[in-house]
Image (cartoon, rainbow, N blue to C red; front, side, top):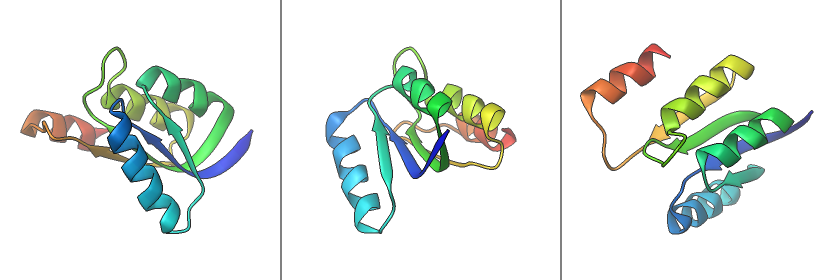
Length: 96
């Protein structure tokens, strides 16, 4: 299994590009996924030190990505980002 610093997951291409460029400029190796489904595939084949994921995505949400990361690699840090946050989502994410 290979290792990279950061996996960025977002279904909005412009946001994915912006986050990718920002994290790369900070000196980290970066992989991207345009959906939660694609993120699952990447998580199975590579270990990441951190995953940054959008919360609201079709089919596989950011919370689903969080669950999969914590199941397969409990020490990996996960950052959830969203423009549509709720207190319930925040509480659920913090419990994981």
